[in-house]
Length: 96
Image (cartoon, helix red, strand yellow):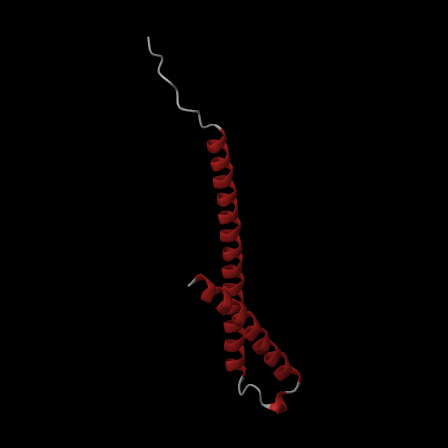
């Protein structure tokens, strides 16, 4: 699920860039008819900004999670190394 969210977030950034570009092109050349009304242009622009924000937040969360898991793995390996070095040999009981 995390991989799907990450891929979807990257695709959302790409598509929001496309829609923002279309909005800017519509402002400079409205005769092309990319967007039919100002209201729809505003809504598309707001949608793109929201999706872009969500995608960046998701990617940042994924990177933070990966960094945290990497630190936990390093700590576990360090503890495993410490515990394997401190193993005592079995003690013999002295017989009288």
